[in-house]
Image (cartoon, rainbow, N blue to C red; front, side, top):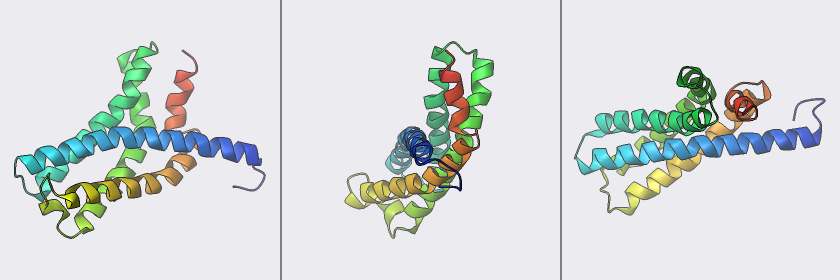
Length: 157
């Protein structure tokens, strides 16, 4: 907590950051899991599999923010920049950490879909990504950036 921050304000900030990070993790996890499953099932090598997983993580991460904005009445041309502003840093942090962890777990990228190592390393990586992204999201939200940008538009519609 920063000097002069009221404890209830810090608690509220933590709750918003926790929710934003969980929201971001959900989109990233869907894309990440789907990408790793597709790449592994197709027998792709490490880098094409990771590239697909990262691309899908960004796609799903942005979509999980974009769809509610459009449903709230924002035009797509207005909603897209908001989703990009809300999620880019958080998704990037999650993807860097997530993929670094999977790459560091011995044998994880060579494990098959039926192997506990595949799913265990993925769960560990997503947990580490959440822990890395939470303080980033908290910092951004405290400054009116990140998910605070999207939340401001949800409350107006």
